[in-house]
Length: 346
Image 1 (cartoon, rainbow, N blue to C red):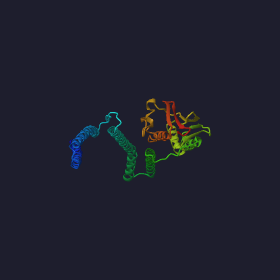
Image 2 (cartoon, rainbow, N blue to C red):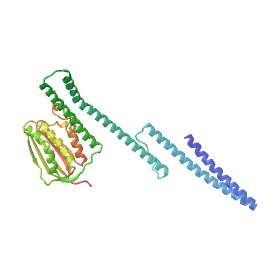
Image 3 (tube, helix red, strand yellow):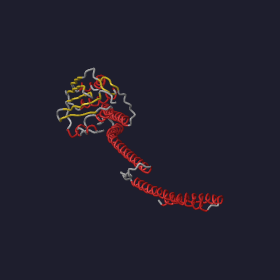
Image 4 (cartoon, rainbow, N blue to C red):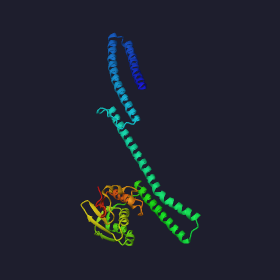
């Protein structure tokens, strides 16, 4: 502030000095040429009045400039101290207000960017923690099997059983890595969804084809009610992936001889796909938690999976303007409803 005051004072003094010098030179020359004292007095009076006006104008500008510099320094101090809300200046349509207004807007953008970076770091930390937790068990099992096979003599039958266990753990790791790759590609925007208004029948058929083998092994009945003419705005490949994840869960968590019913109907804005199973059901207080990444209920850890299928399904459907709902009752099964837009939003 002292530097600003000194600079303003020096500038004002310099301007007044230049003006006075020029006026004195002009009046002196005019008096020497004309020799009229009255004209000289009038000239001096004119110069005096001009000096007064100039001094008042400079004083006003100086006052406004100092006021603005004070306000600007206070705003910068608040920004340096990390205040989340900065006061706006008086609503005057002048240069000072405009600069202050843009400074406040710039600071708000900086705060939003800082919050966004903090959230991304938190997500990354959580993701790393989840990956570490999920990978730890298969790797520990593989190490134990490997040490046992190297250090202990065993029959060919037992060795074959150990190798089969290794294959199971490797399959878990492969499934986890593939799921993580898909998740990271979705979240970072690497995947470009090719969304078009197209029949849902083929999309649903491709998802069903991937789970029928496991459903037949558990002697489950699968019924489908999907008219071939129904269309929705979606990406066939990734929507099929989302539907497969829901159907795969229905097969996993339903008992032997269970049933899966799929019903597709057209509504005003959305195409609704209901996937109903006769599984164990989900408590109402967990309906939101099941869509979290790596979430699994405590009593299903013996069932294969890493708890990422429903998370992926919801992310894929949401990216296309749709949404997923669940209705479930413990002991009576669940109904997952997928809503896809019938037309592209303008």
